[in-house]
Length: 49
Image (cartoon, rainbow, N blue to C red):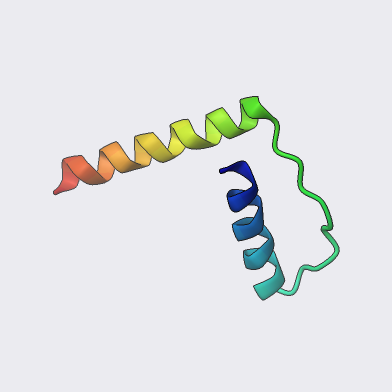
């Protein structure tokens, strides 16, 4: 799952013309923070419906 997110980030950066970033390391703690923020956003969207 982590690698999928890294691939998505790399694709976005490539589309923006940023190709210098070769390797992106996401630690488990950062990954947890990222998924937590996604959950919060999801809850907010759900409340709006």
